[in-house]
Image (cartoon, rainbow, N blue to C red; front, side, top):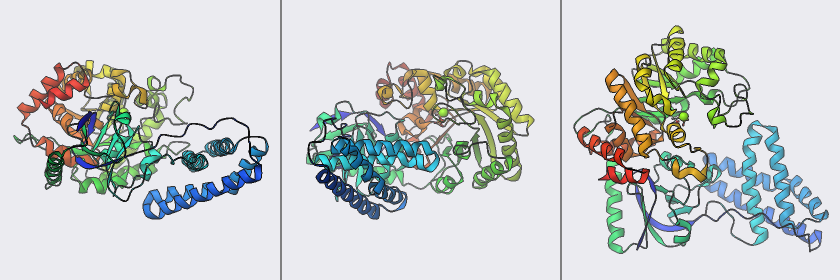
Amino acid sequence: MSDLVGVGVGRGISVASVLTMPEPLAPPSDEPLAAPVDAEADRVQLALQQVADELRMRAAAAGGEAQEVLEASALMAQDPAILGDVRSRMEAGANAERATWDAYAAFRDMLTSMGGYMAERATDLDDVSQRVVARLRGVPAPGVPESSEPFVLVARDLAPADTAMLDLTKTVALVTQDGGPTSHTAILARSKSLPAVVGVVGLLDAVTDGQVAIVDAKAGTVVLDPDEASVAAARAERDSRARAASAPITEGALADGTKVPLMANVGSAKDAPGAVELGAEGVGLFRTEFLFLDATSAPTVEEQTAAYVAVLEAFPGKKVVVRVLDAGADKPLAFLNDAHEENPALGLRGIRALRASEQILRDQLTALANAQAATDAELYVMAPMIADREETEYFVSLGKELGLERVGAMAEVPSIAVVADQVLEVADFVSIGTNDLTQYTMAADRQLGTVSAMQDPWHPAVLRLVKMLGDAGSSAGKLVGVCGEAAADPALAVVLVGLGVTSLSMSASAIADVRAELLTVTLEEAKQRATRALAATSAAGAREAAAG
Ligand code: PEP
Ligand code: MG
């Protein structure tokens, strides 16, 4: 029996045998073709056919969105243009693997340059290409493994394309060597309520397929080869946690009755019914980018009004916090951002980009004011990336001029925490975006795997900034919520409340776990945990200290 330690996502616990995701294939060699072209072309054709058949079988079993993705991939595997291109490359001297690899790469570049839907499909070609080359090479295809039995999926990390292929009826837990609490794997695990432990150092060297593992997300541990007693204890614990998570929906509160509203993060009106069903007491973050992302120019005031009304109508009498467009860095928009910024995360992003194109901001605020007038929801509007009081004054006064009642700031740039007292003199509320706040505090790109260990909102530096904001909120008598991924981590949610945070907003699927955890502590205990975490010297230390 041995223990591996990482960062747990959620509170779940699972027991099953391990299946490892094969590593991506190394690129083929440049050795010239040694066999006759016709024979090699037959071999490639057979591999393409086998991959297409396999993808179709998986598509039929998958259903839903994954079925469409897989069927499209099967078609791509059998595109006659590909085989023709592979053949010409072999005639020019390339070996079969190299010719296949390069033909798919060329196809991918072509799709990417077409933009829109075709460009989105381009990344799926990489998966097809890897599968075909694996067949030619006679090695297992990379990507999500399949099994008729439940399994714990072990991987270096998961790419978005992998997650579409995951069979959630068989995958009972995710464990990754890379990735932090805001990685794609963690977000997927949270949204599917799948226990996960990410960032497990030495994982791939420590596990072998078939080994039994207990994955305890709450403890952040993976126990390999557990004895029978541990397996029985884990199963009992799994059932008791599942009972707690499926407890009746109540308002978010601590054990002493202190209310902590639990809200949902939504991306469009489509997410609203699910959020209501899971007990969201409102919306703590409505990301409005979806309206703009595929557009070549900003949508009209009328189009925007309709989209905002659709979300607000789902929450009559409830609080809905809308974030105005956050363009730039990881969410670039051709008509707003300069693609040539060397360091876009530190460039014209969020409120800075909107200020430089003020008409876009005015239109959005006007549409929001129209939606406020047309519905019964309690609308709050906030701007991303606000750095100080001057920017807050600009945004709040513009919002009020255009008819909004409650206007606030997102705390994502560390400077806002340092001057939180000044900001809260003018903002009606603050909502802390811990994803960006962590990225900027630790100077660790949230999209970069190599620095994922630094992107941990448990870091005492981040927690101290949260405390500054919480203290300023309580002195000013104003609301300070959290709407980053940190709010979805049950143990951290308790600490955030102990630091003075007044509401938590997260993917709706995380609400049940957070609700259950909050009910286990009083405000006094939450404050004690927060004090211990603040005194730690690392993210891991803070986690441990909070746990007592
Ligand atoms: C955040 O930064 O924490 C946040 C909620 O915004 P986004 O993840 O959309 O940048
Ligand atoms: Mg952000």
